[in-house]
Image (cartoon, rainbow, N blue to C red; front, side, top):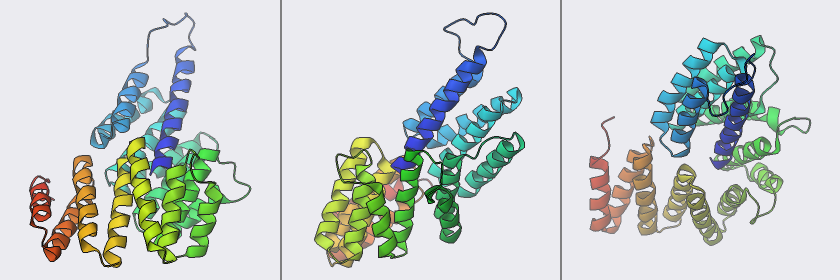
Length: 303
């Protein structure tokens, strides 16, 4: 989700600031152009993450963590575990991500560090992906309560996650509250999040044509933001809606688009979406779509 990615970037920026300060804490004036090894590794890992090369980001953040542990820098250790967990989340290694979050929290508490709302949000997101919504909601409440000290971007990402869970639970009251709390529609900076929750609300309330248009707007916004996983989520939401309302041909086209993109991101759901596109294409007699989807499936790595 786009909000989580923005939170990750903010955390990375904080880490770089700390590294610069740490690098200057020496008896001799540092050379202005010199960068610490930890900073160099972190910059490479961050670039891989931002480019959507999540498997590489996992590998690089392991190296960042190793260096942070070597240097025994508390904030760098917590931040490296956070970023590693976020990268593992992106490649579907949910249990491994949760383990890194546990270790980051333990390190923070041992070093008497402050409560980290971004880490709490990441924990809630991982629990949601692990299909543990009750636990995810309980964790998320720590961010969404009125006395929470969470930064605005973390709170907004938490509201979006709460809305998604409400949509999946068909809880229109909770979904409506989350959408309203996120703020107005465009040109808000979180416009895609707002529109996605509103599209879900339209779908659950039976306003299907407006919901489909809303999901299509979300697809365009996520694409413009470079949030291709969010784009694929909106495409599959549109596909499910089209199928439910009796348009399997349109649903097949949406599923094919999502599956092709997901395959290039190495998303774990790519095969499922492409196989669904094949079934829908066969049902509608769209041989061209079936052949294209099957060709994409053949290129996927064996599971």
